[in-house]
Length: 323
Ligand code: DGY
Image 1 (cartoon, rainbow, N blue to C red):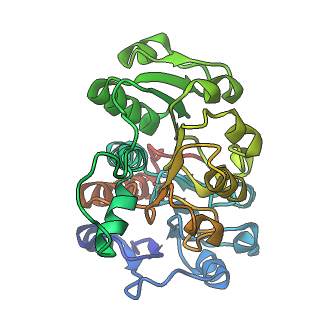
Image 2: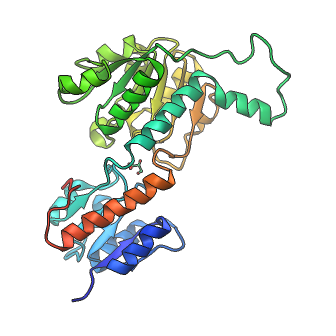
């Protein structure tokens, strides 16, 4: 029997690409160039499976195909707000993602960002590399203590919980949670966390707010001027979720006028383009979407996609089916 035809839209870890090529009739993207909308649409017509990542905007137009051959979009990544789910549903396509395997590494980056912005690590490194460090002094780059402070976590899924574990058990932080649905008391008890009803309640009581909710239209600009105004004037905002969750113009104003203490971002609206207003803010730490960027996580994500494809083409329910 012919092997299913699979299109991999970016370079993946070598071990995963090797396994994909062995199991499927796989076409790899050796040039690692993101696909255009037209190329994605063509892929829908000629492959049994398309394996997109966050850099592929699989918009409604990509699904504008009469009889697509693709039956599954096996996404490499946990977030899938770059895929138009109505378009996929319209063709009865299955969509899968890669949860769990990147939760710890993404929470590590969220904690890295939290520490960097509180302790002014980005500013310090910029100063040192510019040859402007004049030596130790009691008033130099004085930051904010992290241990024992209150951390608000927006979205208490797997990554949010890993963040709570690090912050509470590692840094003795008090954890306050806002989540769409009710979190079970057992889970909250693991981190001595309290769940509040809404963001209006969460924002004013936190020294740090870390975003771990999904992106997409429903959460676009969830953090806007009104929410930023509810934060304490010395509080910090951390985002490892999706760029669109924050209104970046509102954030740049809050940072510029110092109505909040600072922010640290791993994700950006319209990335890799960075809003120029953000680049001027010294009290902002920025990383280029590194949340899951460890050898371990990136390989595990790839093998999770393989598991989903193997199940799908064997007629079994893929474990990570989101549609
Ligand atoms: C994820 O898995 O969602 C990461 O942000 C990479 O897309």
